[in-house]
Image 1 (cartoon, rainbow, N blue to C red):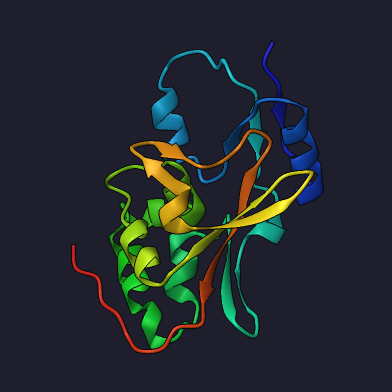
Image 2 (cartoon, rainbow, N blue to C red; image 1 turned 180 degrees about the horizontal axis):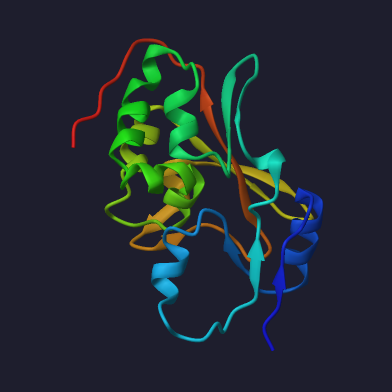
Length: 175
């Protein structure tokens, strides 16, 4: 029997991930099309209620993009000129309806060769924050994506943020 859980905190989500295999549901823009009309076979961990994973924060040396942050959030947030490529990318991801729900981290976790967000985040030297019950680790984006639909995400882990060192200069993205 499959399970569905909608945790109310990141700690609760991590505890569930530590108990067994779960398929994480965030924006759902790739989740549902990949599922199609087949019956669910995996436990579903719905993180859409986790407000702590959405938004953009500035620390002394990084911008931290929460895992549930949408492409629309990227466009609307006042970011320095170096993030212009990421903002332009955000405007190219699917339709406006997709941009409103698709998460930046989901774009990375799917590891699609067509993922629009990857080039802009690579240029910004982004790293992925991975958490489990036991630990938090940070991987450079180029080490997180291992190939077509393959990532370095370990069992029991979830992406909680994308960290970008405070950049200088400007950037652009053309599709």
